[in-house]
Image (cartoon, rainbow, N blue to C red; front, top):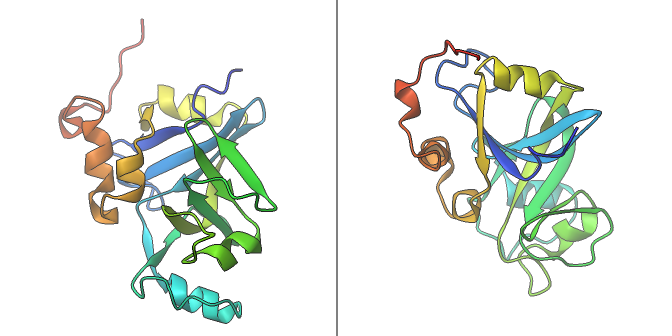
Length: 184
């Protein structure tokens, strides 16, 4: 199996009924023979990043007071991920193609809002996971569409507009697509 879906947006089809994933966009960070891992990028929580940093005894004074923490998915909701654009030599970082990075270590949180931290970032709690072959089956069943990651959507588009913006990358109006697929 290739890592074809890695560093792609996974876009929920309009008919997706799963309450966790309806109208979501996920950044797929890992896809291999064992399954896939993604982070939902358009579900802000009622939790502010500055509050999280304060709870961890980290300085968040230089951050935007309204910056949210995102719900990254239902798996391990206590686990944090920082998606960012600049490498920084932090302890636990996964490098994605195209210059994106996902860091899970505390040192990147300490750097946020400082000259040493990444300029573009967001923080998510939890992740979405698919077992071996599960994602492929869901794509074949028309639950998801995928497209290459767009950094503007990831970092600059308001969260509530990301699903629609990601669907526009496909060049079709996904609200007009049928849930029934034909397979040759």
